[in-house]
Amino acid sequence: MALLLYLRPMPITASNLLQELQERLPSLSPSQGLVARVILADPQAAAVNTVEELAKRAGVSMPTIVRTCRSFGYASVRDFMVALAQSYATYGSHLHRSVLATDSTADVSSKVIHGAMASLRELGQSLDAKVIDEITDRMAKAERIDCYSVGSSSTFIANELQSRLFRLRVPSNAIFDAHQQLVSASTLGPRGIAFIVSHVGRMPYTLDAARYARAHGATVVAMTHPGTPLAEVADLVLAVAGPQDPLRPVGTETHIAHLVIIEILIVRLAQKLGPVAIHDLQHFKQLMHAYGFEGNGFSNVGDNGDKSGDGTQSYPS
Image (cartoon, rainbow, N blue to C red; front, side):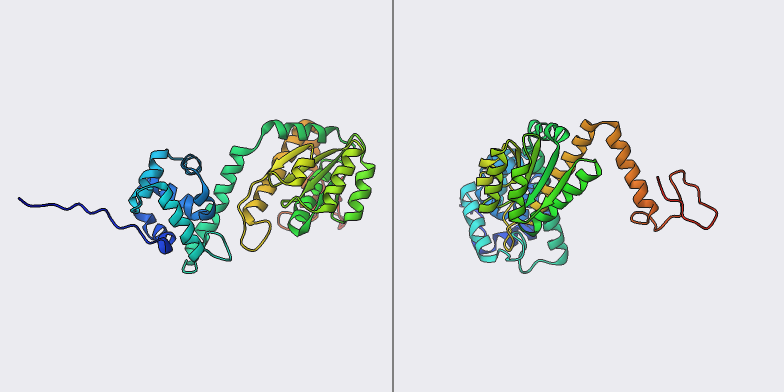
């Protein structure tokens, strides 16, 4: 009688698990491919996710997670995750959390893009519509909205918010100077809003400005990472739990999420302000187009689309 020996495939060594995931990606089943892409997009986060969390992120069932881990030779999800963490520690990039030193341009592009897409999916699942409506309700009634920022990334976001508010004729300022933030906080009053953008959410002078604004009756809105001291001080929190970046406090995914939240706030605010706000936005777009800031360059036309015909510029009214 022949004796048949069934040998379990040897697990991939921990040091090259990330590389193996990348190489085997084209040959995996569609559902296991989804799991592998989520892991490769953010191996740090995947290594600490529960089976349920990882399945939710990948849009698959929990048994699919188990089957994927076993297909790489690991007896349990836990063993797979330990190997994943070790692999990232050995080969993880210091330029981007999911990029390997041996990755091609196509690999880098795919990982960065899929990482951004995964972060936006998580944002869509975590955003609280009630908080958005509460913030925009207060914005619509505010006498002034001052946008505070900390650092270059936050300042960009605060300036973007202020610019969008300005186009809706909402009195607003963008302030990055610590002293001026305190002056602003002392003058906002009960119908004012201090909108603070700080992913880290721990700078002492910003926390002082937030407390001072609240003490004077203003609403404090914070766009920050969950659980920061700033989140605890604020009246309303837009929590963005973006993945860690190897080099910067605020990574690209978090930056994109901030911009998307600003877009949601402004669109919802415009809805609440009504037809006048929509008309203004359309008018400003026509104005920018006529002066060459948008479209195909300077256009010698007025609001009615007619050229002046006399060699002079017809300025939009």
